[in-house]
Image (cartoon, rainbow, N blue to C red; front, side, top):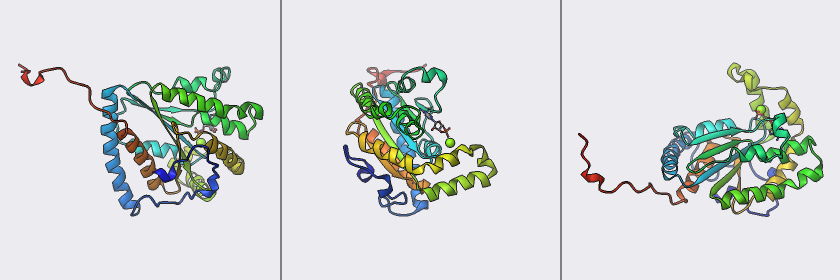
Length: 267
Ligand code: AMP
Ligand code: MG
């Protein structure tokens, strides 16, 4: 999965990354879906181990343009995982109370505790994405945030959090199709809002903002992965593989049991 990881301090132009790429897996959709089921099972076991060991904290950040597939990724990658110990934190337009604090205040409250996996569906990165594109604060102010964010994540990692960040990368054509599907399919209509069309007009500005996010905030301790996301099955495979490989790399083990349990008889 190395090929999708953004090396620290590299200069990244998302348009140079192919959202249709599927070079890391042989075979097509059918084989890919089967491979995902196997990864789901491994993830289920690893999450149980994480919970039992109660030592590591895992933070998964998902960012994407509208229709990029954040919800679908959560649904498919974490399928079968015990909901106890996994939590999703959604970051929407900040409430007045949240806006009255610094931008990391609401984020820090949602970071994972020991034994827990937390998935950020959007994140503090909105504070240098939508906030930048819509000029919700001055350039001087959002310009300082990359350093804050790197320092904040450094602190989380120093204190025992493992951080993985995924940019689900689709292109304009794919977004058009997915927005159209939201109009055409009755069970998807609830997801359609006209506001998304306005955001779509701002695609180039968002790509510029993502360019800075990916170039400035991919670190050795909290790397970004650019996930080719035009194909949903491939996107799921990439995210699940990175997650499983990272959790396996933590070297976790079940806690010691009480001594001499072999002698225990239950009457
Ligand atoms: P959705 O994910 O479709 O439910 O939409 C959530 C909306 O909240 C998106 O339009 C985001 O851009 C917006 N949002 C999230 N975080 C922020 C933020 N910090 N400031 C302004 N808007 C935000
Ligand atoms: Mg939306």
